[in-house]
Picture 1 (cartoon, helix red, strand yellow):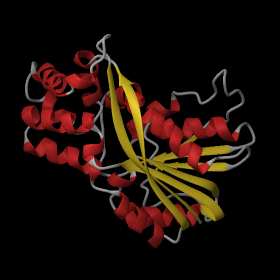
Picture 2 (picture 1 turned 135 degrees about the horizontal axis):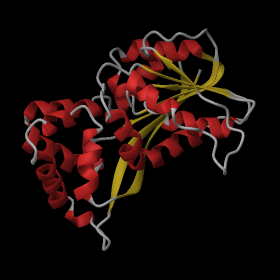
Picture 3 (picture 1 turned 90 degrees about the vertical axis):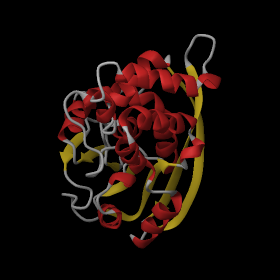
Length: 275
């Protein structure tokens, strides 16, 4: 999610991103990788890899004979990504992921180098979407596959609706406008850009998943602190994060379960295509 200049974090925010954004991303990581089907032995690029959610899952799919590269502009994200091992007891033999720092608009890879290019929740942050997708097409071999996710409309994810209101209440209008960048690449914009890049056989669909989050008084401030627009809330004063969490909890009360966890839908647009 840190593929371009619109999403930069510093300090320990990348560590928080890996820990506290993961529950929200998990179902869409699986949906994206399932849709594009990296096969054993293939070469995969995770474009705008953040801390490596997609890259690690792809590594488990391509196996020891495959190759996975994650590229991101943010060195803090890449440092955290490099600390995570893709191999698990359920997926032994996954290759080590190679991590590279670069802008999506200037990829340091050869033409036709990858069988699969994946881009999870990064397209909305690229400084130049057309240039980034042209690069994605260049490094994808003929017949290779491309897949990307972006958040669907704000209204499809009640957590984000409430989060925006809470951010504006505590951090102000400028922080809320920063939050809005996460939704500046709707499906029609992404599909058009993918087509202009030269990909064919496009398919676009919305994926909705019910996600269980920990109780909000503890989870909400930590999740927000992983995101660029969380700084304005933190800077509003020592009691601001708790006040933010209280607003969020009030707005999301209908989704709170008996054990105080939150079960809530999120909606993402999934676009796939062929080179």
